[in-house]
Image 1 (cartoon, rainbow, N blue to C red):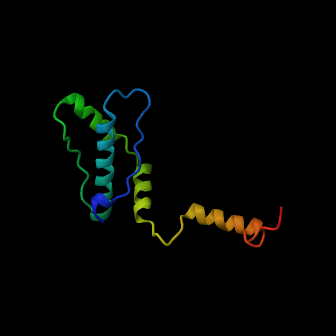
Image 2: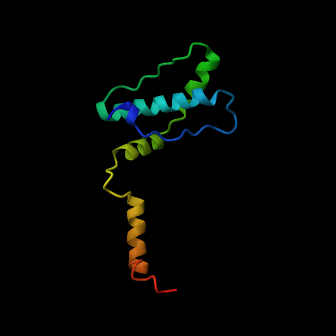
Image 3: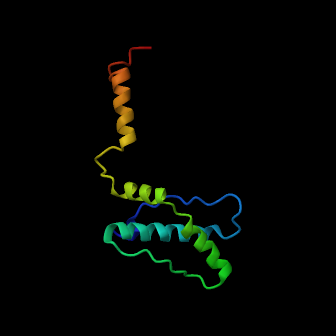
Length: 112
């Protein structure tokens, strides 16, 4: 899978205490997720490489890079490796529960 074809999660930009550029934060977030996905697929090491020279620009990028959590990485991997024919586990569980409790929706339309 190409790194351009990865479905990325939206970044969790902090609402308070962050005084940098949201664009550079998002760039750092996306680069980290792409690097982690590449590590998952190919075993490549995840290396922080700052594309911005000045410190005030680099701090926003580093904040985005550092804001990625293990849960975000797991969600990214599940999002990109889920089989399209397989419904999501939560949706499948919801459908099975609804079917068991209320029966088939087509047969129960006369009720109510």
